[in-house]
Image (tube, rainbow, N blue to C red):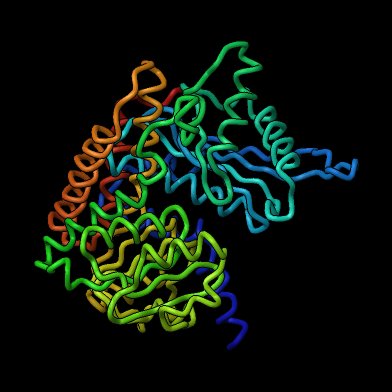
Length: 424
């Protein structure tokens, strides 16, 4: 019996399998043309590269890197690059697929891609990271570009990494190509508002969900897992909006205060000390206790597979806003549906980042840059419109919002695929 449970757990933890279960169900509900189904379920291209890097001690180490381009029917592939010891091809494949659906949900002219290198960036010097990034970029030169595939930051990558990629690509092109990546420093073609975009998008969709359920924002308790660029930004913005943020976690610990956290003070403490271990202004709880806290909004913004068949029945939120990619497994969806949890799925909830990446790409290509007020206003318009599109799809087909988001995305990609035809 334990063997069966372990096998089920391995399947459940595979992000690509979770994505495919949702894709298959959405395709069935749409009565998708079997030929279109066959095409959309496979990536366009998967690349494995082996990246030799001279380490600081003078020896060479070879790192394994991936880039998966899932679909380009609606435009250039788009997706981040992550550096982590846990990167797998299945994970990158799933994330690339999610990017296709995410771009389609918010109706921007990109397809999906994702990249990653198996490494531990915490154990590498800045010089080692730069040499690895530049060699990885060089291996992908024929596959990326403003009209082909536009990378962006992801887990353990940042503005500096994007600057190295842009510079490497530009050196080979013999002219500066700012639009080859997004998430760059503002000084070399980045967009204002990009850094806060994912957290701000989460705020916008949570506001819409609260309107739907007539929640008073000042009385709405929020628990956030993750205190980085997504979770930390969402916590700060939601606190300023008037939400009662009662729980927050990062990799070093989880804290809870039923009366509401001092979010600004907590984030300042975390920035200074790099840990929550000795934070004294709130109760310390386990990650499981935090996720299972009673609240109106639960916002997992850390990593995949945080809500599974093992803990979904203990989740006590009314709204689940997915700041991370794939924080909820497919098996957990049925449990949450039975508990009447309103899910704002990842391919909608955290699409603020790729939306402002699209704005950055547009600004780079036309050489004219917007102020932050314009960026935020256009982000608000797209996030609210996309939220309503998903809710309307859910009502039209009598499905939950997860299924509705996939159906909306797949229908849009399928339409463009049929319109273009299949080159053979």
